[in-house]
Image 1: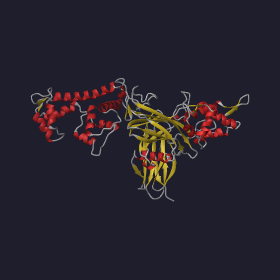
Image 2: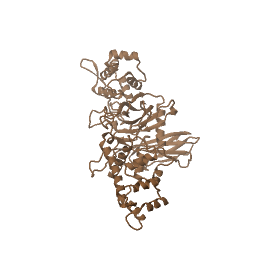
Image 3: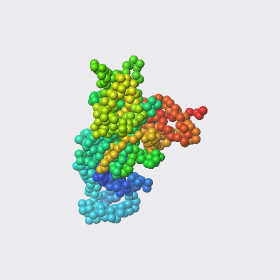
Image 4: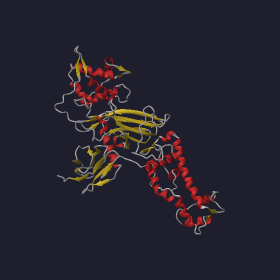
Length: 575
């Protein structure tokens, strides 16, 4: 059972993350850089005011460790306790059997040579070389303890001051947190803050002169008649290894600030797959797990090359908003003027303008032939060739060989005129784009993707992949299995259930490793404030032999309340 609640951190937690950030950036240029050696780990810990022993370092950096990221370092920092002056004094007093207030070089060497953390001769000599604590070969350990703690605090303070002074570093994002220095000692941390989306045109909003490059792309999820969800996919090309920051979010088409579009609560996600020569070669690089308001974010480092960006929504919230009642009269699409001339209604023009915004994938205010053809494939299953595009150029408003918003309206007015006002073909277009007869978008969710790369240009291209659904399914399955362990289904040693518990979504997968199909009964009745992508509380799934199958995705019905996930899976008898 898992209870999902709004994440919050205490003031103490906020201070811990601030210390970690300052220390990390005192050693590395970016929080996306990994620690690659035990020596680096020791140095960052020291910058954070810790003095780990060799035994501690060996515990954190085992023979199987190759690297630690920033989040890993934060966990190490929390486990490595700060050495207090009282503890040091207590240890030295045990050596000072006569209570003289000092110990000799020989006594200290004997203690450190017989057990515990052994000190080298060079390290011991270095301690006694400090003038403030060396009294004729005797160690003034009270002064030593005072200087030790003072030096530790100074290291920590210096790292924080360097971070505070450097605006670019100060605003950089770290792990699953974002840094914001406390306004006062009394200020306390509220909800966990995730990286704020950078302003368009200003690259990442760290500083005005930062070296991040931005590209964006639009798209749309469509709820198909069979209950599946489809969308375009995208290709990302990176000319060099770089830090990457991705966001995906529902696209608000409402012109009223007080009334956002109804689909803004739909969950969105973006999976990053390496683009191998074959589908089997594709590897999951990462996916958006953290959330900032409506934005889902991922950041990491990618090598030069080509990647697939695969948009995803669970289907928990992208559902038909309401059934159209029999008494609801469809909205008029076409009307006639007093002179008998046909025109598009105001309501239709507003919807067509929204559709234009959705299919204007690169957001340049114009529709290229490629963008228009994605629209045509969606609504008619056909494509417009260059000759037909040239005819469009003669009849409709275009600029730079691209269709303008006005031209898009003229094209649909011509369609209505050719049918003498019959709106049948217009309805085919609208319904294919997710609208009902009340001109409500209830079977689609427009979205926007933003990609930011450091020190290099970024290129995104839309794709319509034949293997797209299979590639996305592979990515979703991998995201579940790599994040959690397997639990054997009761009574079946070779049927396993994987349950991914993320910040925003819970997903389960069933792996059937037997040579016969298995039917699994799924019961969510003990869950609270949860909705399943299956649309039911109790259901059964049939898993073919030697197959993995995503069982369900679960989201909270209301984000404002706690949600509890409790699911029981059991095998049904084979028939």
